[in-house]
Image (cartoon, rainbow, N blue to C red; front, side, top):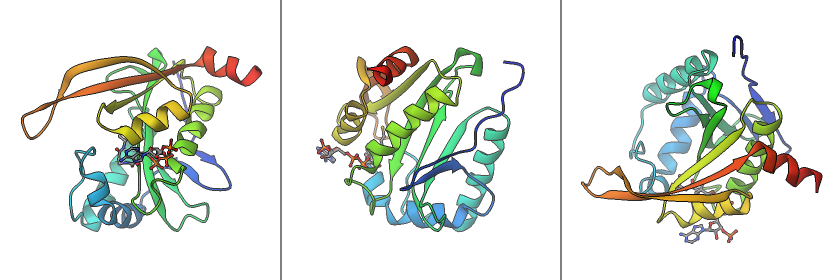
Length: 194
Ligand SMILES: CC(C)(COP(=O)(O)OP(=O)(O)OC[C@H]1O[C@@H](n2cnc3c(N)ncnc32)[C@H](O)[C@@H]1OP(=O)(O)O)[C@@H](O)C(=O)NCCC(=O)NCCS
């Protein structure tokens, strides 16, 4: 792809998914710190107390990588842009943009989790990804013990394609099994025309 200018936002009445901007660090700090207990099992980056500066540095890094098409990290904001409800993104994870394959990752803040938001955001990202982005294949990976994550993928219509055994080493020295879910552009288009 000679030139690709990534779309920067997807707006719905309930949430806006958009790339991070300088100044978003405070909202990320508040959401991540308040969600530590909820995130710590499956989000290896979680820690009890992020400083504002750490999170501001992260959002600026995310912003830079977005503009250079290296990684598309997105925040899930309230429509009035006053609170971060979670994070998501289309990740290349070693693929080049020309492969047209992205992996969606996601976390929903403790205060917003368990209310169907993750499922609605994933559905919106599948729609956006297959209509405004070049993706031919979208993946979702989760620890096989992460029941909520697997449930969100299934409810959004993704297919369980494989389970990798002990493919990810964990900090405690054990290894986790991973479910790979996917959806193809053709499947998405077909499901819309039925
Ligand atoms: C996984 C996550 C993104 C899902 O988002 P969410 O908004 O909470 O999800 P939803 O409310 O749309 O759906 C959650 C589903 O999981 C189920 N669920 C939630 N927690 C569960 C648990 N501990 N055990 C079994 N099922 C659970 C819910 O019942 C619901 O299924 P249902 O609608 O069939 O009842 C969110 O919970 C989260 O951020 N978790 C921590 C970070 C994480 O694990 N991210 C994913 C990494 S792959």
